[in-house]
Length: 287
Image (cartoon, rainbow, N blue to C red; front, top):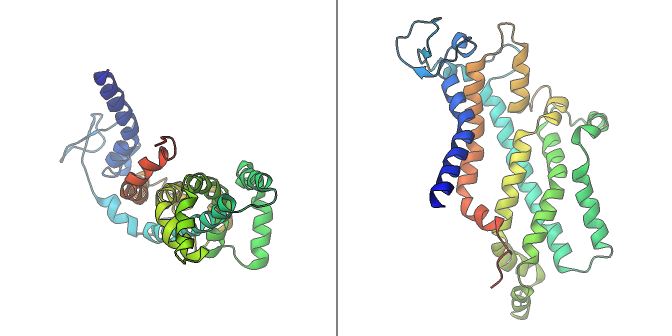
């Protein structure tokens, strides 16, 4: 059985790694090799261009060209990556903070119609985001929020709030009330008990929630494409805009940019992996 488990894990890892490996290979090719009829998978220096072998001459020019402004874009890839970082981090922090506070209220206090309110919060997740893109666009034009970082931060926070509330309520329900009661007996205020007792115990849930909220905001395309056409364009919208390049899609630069775009999510997930693994099984094992 151990051999079967290892084999399944290896096969699964290989299937998951193939797209990343192909992007890595494409990022060191020239454009002609990326669209060649015969797949080129073997980087061999000095390989003649245009032949029908599987070899290609590696080059790092696509990485250097990430700093250039391509046709169909208004700024370089790094500028758009900065927009994604600002919007992703701020919306994740707001979603986790507001979701934790809201979930704490539902978990610790008697809220009239709590089940109905929780269902209402969850129901906002059922609605396709693009179903409200037109009214949101009209509202943002009135408030002059289109094309701004603040506009997307507010929007992503709202759409991630339902996920944050439901995830954090499950974690907070598992934290014994006795911890807070002991703190209150010792003279702590409710806020001090929340900050000094509950939040340290809830850090696992907050880490898990942050991962899902960040991934959702990081990869969002519809609102980023519709609401921003100037100063706050994120990377997904930037990649879509490159399709207007008169010389064709710059696939090597797209592959290099996609690798860079994936890296922050991978790094963040690795940093919180202990909390993430514990959070997936939190509350399933009773002492």
